[in-house]
Image 1: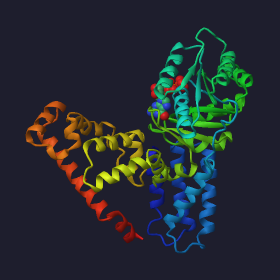
Image 2: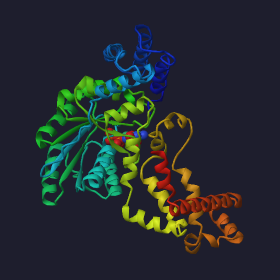
Image 3: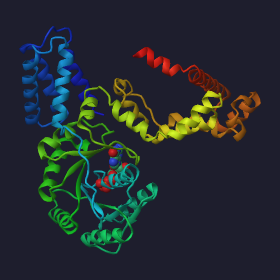
Image 4: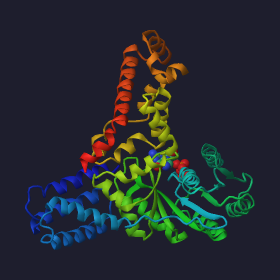
Length: 441
Ligand code: GDP
């Protein structure tokens, strides 16, 4: 995410390395580079100029206050704070209160509206224990209705559709009435994609909005489209005065312009960031965390939150007991792998670890990394999975045949598993973790 912007920012800060303090000269040099980096990331020049002017004032104003802080670090902190402000400061939640709450989703065709509608339904179901109803209001493309139906099935949510009805306002109104009668507490209305210049379609979305009076109207935009995204955001806001923006495809090769300028230009907060095609890749947008990521400082808070989402205390206790008795088996291992996979796309997860994003940017990491391990374990008998110690040579040979990997690979994996198991048991018995933590304090 934002690799090129990250690189250029880093080089702007490098200028200050070795400098004793911030001066008119070295600040001016860094500022120039930062401005260039922003413009190259497709941030509008006026915004980039205003942003860097602010940073300059801050940097020169603060040079005498914090003598103990290195100039480069001080500059990073100033840029991070300003960037956070530029993107809206605080995270903003969505309003889904109502009987039912109604979310209207609008945007250009292909921006990721339907995918987002599915992701939002899953988010509200899992994080807020709600019972969402997805509504297919694209009366122009039958395929869009099918797409929403498939998504709904995947997440176990209900979908409302009227394939014969060509009036999206009445479909949405009927859906809300249906939701009331079927105890759905939130309705997500996925509308047809439209071009901002298409008057008829823009009138239609305005009519849908006034016809259903949503509690929340969201505008979905493809972040890969840079300044165009911001122009479209303005055009839609004129028509439907939405409450917030959803940035999609942040996992792609985006330059950062949309994320950095949309709040400033339209005055509406970015509420969600979508980072993949999988349904669990939706995050509440936190300006500060995003600024940290842009500046290459990772986003450890989001990483930990994702991990916590998957954390089950009962399960952890059960595992701890098994580990202590050296009984951690291949089934437990498989379960752990599945939990990691549920956290989302592996590469974007690793990118959240400070310093990691850049290191792995050219490496192809995907969930396939697990598939070898999984295929090996799936080729074991239940007995072998529960009692790793019975794996002798002939059993390993049979497993190799079953999963299509060679015996050397099976040996390696078994050896690694045994080492890991031993280490975990030692740590749990000797309270190794606690001791390590104490030493760190
Ligand atoms: P709509 O026409 O606005 O409803 O757009 P869709 O939801 O059909 O999405 C268009 C394409 O973008 C599909 O192929 C989606 O899988 C893909 N897509 C949507 N959101 C994301 C995202 O956050 N990241 C990536 N990589 N692809 C996405």
